[in-house]
Amino acid sequence: MRRLSFRILAIISLLGLGLALFSIRRPQPIKVGILHAQTGTMAISEISVLQATLLAIDEINARGGVLGRPLEALVVDTRSDWTFAAQEAERLIQSEQVVTIFGCWTSACRKTLKPVVERTNHLLMYPLQYEGGETSPNIIYLGAAPNQQIIPAVTWSLARLGPRVMLVGSDYIFPHIANAIIREQVQALGGEIVGEQYVLLGSTEVQPLVNQIAETRPDVILNTINGDTNRAFFTELRARGITADQVPTVSFSLAEPEVQQLGISLVAGDYAAWNYFQSLPTPENQAFVARYRARYGAQSVISDPMEAAYIGVYLWAQAVDEAQSPTPGDIRTALLRQSLLAPEGIVSIDAATQHLWKPVRIGQIATDGQFQIVWDSQNAVRPEPYPFGRPPASWHSVIADYQSRWRGQWANPGN
Image (cartoon, rainbow, N blue to C red; front, top):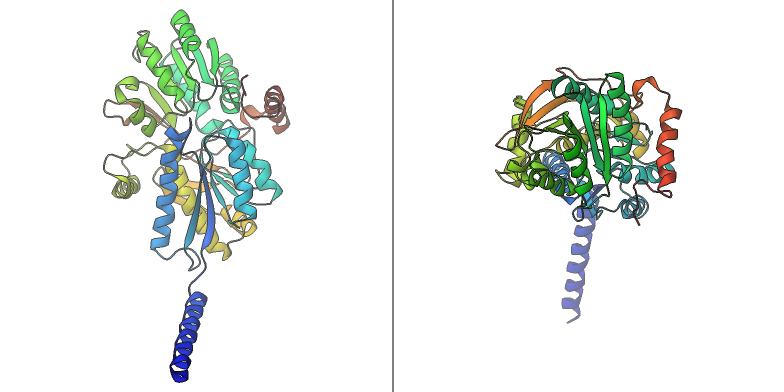
């Protein structure tokens, strides 16, 4: 009996030793946080960006990870609530020990996370175009600065569609600052702003916007509405008989997934300005589309923010490999030297601003839901987060005024 007990104990000890050795040999994962809305008003746009981020992480893991270690993605549904997103960012950094956060869509989300990553000296990879007026040593801006989306689109719109402009947007920081840029540019180009209206994020109360459009009949609508409010807006436009051939809309936050979810017939003929469209015929993009569809389905569509999120993971992985370190400070330093032949073309991180050099494109929505490219900058454009040569302090003052107006928030809190 004693011999049997001894043998059992020996076997248990050997198993324990084997498990310990296996644990020692198995490389520990590098943890990253992903913050995107899977519910709420922004889910219509952010779920697909989350999927593109996870695709890049899975591809990198399939080739052996980074520094011989797998990446572990800790995904959080922000619920379209930027205050909750900031709380979760703090938790991911402090408790989960993630080395980088990938995420956010709205500028309200990014601006709420900005003090978190700066205070903790951490790193946020932000995949969206935005209003400018900002730089941070702790943020890599993967989307367009104003001179890589808004400004060329306004020049094109006034030249091709007409000088009388209506501005519509969601009532938060991005549309207000974007429209401040647009107002200044339209005036300089001899155009006219015939109206400017905002609607709370997530609201469907779009009748005042459409009423003014029906009354003024502008040549073009410049649209900075975000999230599922776009469904209500375009539905009301069409219900009032305002079609794309009569009064075209140029959108700055409407891409292939939103077109698919809104219904192609609702927006066909309208325009959007981005750096990437799924319809790009380059071999790199065709291979990217094939890989994405192999993972998420043959009917899946891909947008600019999705592509930016995807290449952001690869730029980040290159930086970790170069730094030979997964600590946020080392990654940030190495990121400033990264470039990539991306689906959108050659991109590189501008060391002075931590924004990407990117090509600029304008597309028209075709009846198949894809964008026919009607204008292309051809080459990558240098980012200018502070447009028109105005000093940073001037833009900071304008932006701070809105935050003060909204009682310390980055969006109109409503009642």
